[in-house]
Each structure stands twice: as structure tokens, then as C-alpha cells.
Image (cartoon, rainbow, N blue to C red; front, side):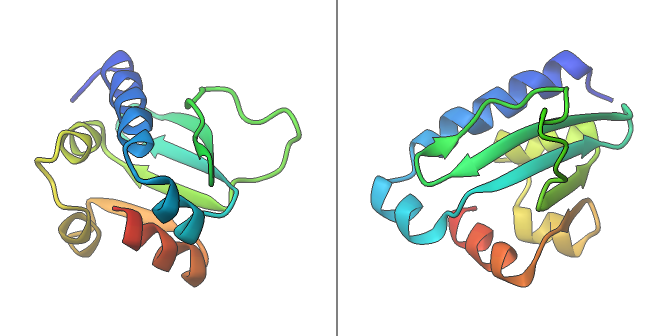
Length: 115
């Protein structure tokens, strides 16, 4: 099991990786959405926001507006680290039940193009 700090660092790395996606691809496939990433084995949830200009840093506090995230991920700590480090394929993780994404079909299709 990874620590909360390791998960926080992995999410920071994910934000950096998202910045590497071309502006054109982000403009074409990204709409503004609130995100949550629940680390099930640590019982901690991180919150963020994705938008055409990037991915905001994740925080442990829910958004102050009280609105629920449109995209909710649930993952174990070790799988989060493996996914961000390129050691775990997202499609296989989804099919194998290692990652759960609760989102609209449209959001899932958009995310698929970015992952």
C-alpha cells in the first residue's frame, strides 16, 4: 500500500503529464468538469478540476461551492502509482476492475482520447 503522500505526488505528476497534451487536443476533447479521485485502501479522496487550459492541482478538501464532481474515479493506492508511472494500462485497469470511473458516457469517451 502506498502512502497518502505518494498518492499526492502521483496526482501532481498526473497534472504535469496533462500539461504535455497539446493545446489542440485539449481544446477538442476537454470540457470543464470537477473530478474526484478516491483512494479506496487509504480512505482518502482528492478533488480537482479539468478544463481546456489544463488540470488544476488536486486537493483533499471538496470544492467550496459544494457541487458534486461530474467524474469520480475510485482506485487503490498502488494502482494509482502504477497508472501514473505508465506501468498499468488504463483500459486493462478498467476492464480488470482495478479502476472504477463514474461519469457520463460523453465524458468517458472524451477521457478515453486523452489517456
